[in-house]
Image 1 (tube, rainbow, N blue to C red):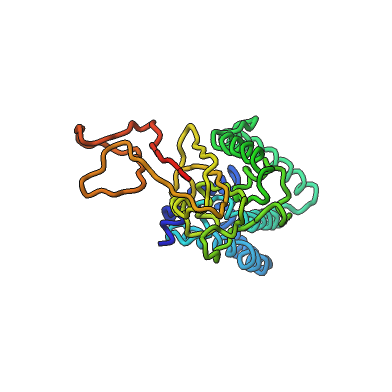
Image 2: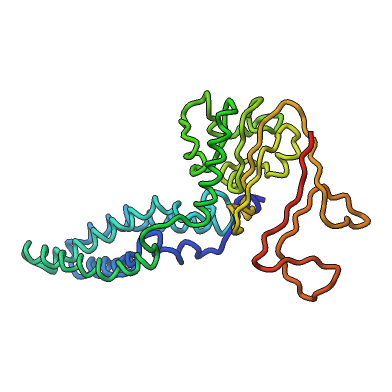
Length: 318
């Protein structure tokens, strides 16, 4: 199922976040300009051709992009992944529609250039005064690194220490890669994309190469190989595994983890030892204890508090 790989959300996910996508207050201008453009076409017939053009080439493309990504995220069909930046292609269309509509209305209402300039300056000052507090509320200043950025920076520092000991690296997270200082277009040191067709299931990596796998790797690359599949491959030696202090979910619902692994021709066997006895019909080789609700406290149910991190215990042996 693609939704299991890429994740999914509700249909109005992007609509509810238009203030972030377009900027605080700008979504209200868009809502005002849509009926204003219709009224302009009715009041001033000479502007009907302009209204037709800005609807056809600006507003409708923006609405199509918004609708398309909303359906993709609702159905879990890749491409959107719940990322607000996917609407970056549509935001310029919306802003241009607002600018053309307001300009045409002002041109018809105000007869002199001086009046137009004065009203434009006043409107700009009022808009900035009203929206600046919204901007600060949305993004306090100065901008400080959040927990996610700090964790990825630490992972990047670890990757920097390891990359010199490996002929090539495969790192998909851009922030982790940035810390290595490598040239992403240098094929001698960097493998930019995983090889989906590698028959050995090692993503096209060669002996000694470094793989830095993160929780977003599977969803963003489309590789149908989660961390469990890579670990059970037998050709990756785990160097280090990092988890954040505060848990968050990566794309596709994968808990955030970063694994540093070396591609080896020698096969490795991975054994996982559960911290609680297996059931009589057990045989599970991998156990993850996650936060769960305890409807009825019982001694036979192992539960974690809401603020406790999921427990993952394993051992890799040669």
